[in-house]
Image (cartoon, rainbow, N blue to C red; front, top):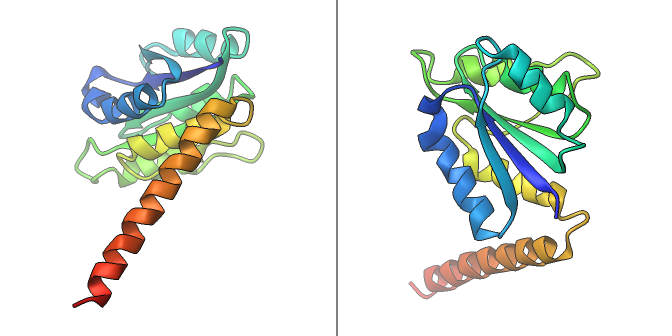
Length: 161
């Protein structure tokens, strides 16, 4: 099975990133987690992304706050899918990170989830992985069906009021 890479710009991002790790664990996906900064360790970030395909990664989640150039720096050096995870870490409530992550130039796409949206970043990475991994696809389908059932049950209870 291919892996999901998670790269965060700082260990201060770990409390949010942990939510993505937990989702990947729940689905039994292989993953690696690293701390590489677009600004402080650009060489290591570049080498990680340049070698991602050869190292068996299907997608990379890049989590960063403030200027949040990490996802773009990763995407500039690989053609595997990169998912930007903007982190709320400044006085701008994460809007700075969101805009830095989502405003990529043409030709260098970065899929971007909500500010602190780590669970959705992991789920999107799993959906990418599910293109080739039937077991992951089945787990995702099952989770969606359970979520729908829960909503319909709540609707039924509401109608009984």
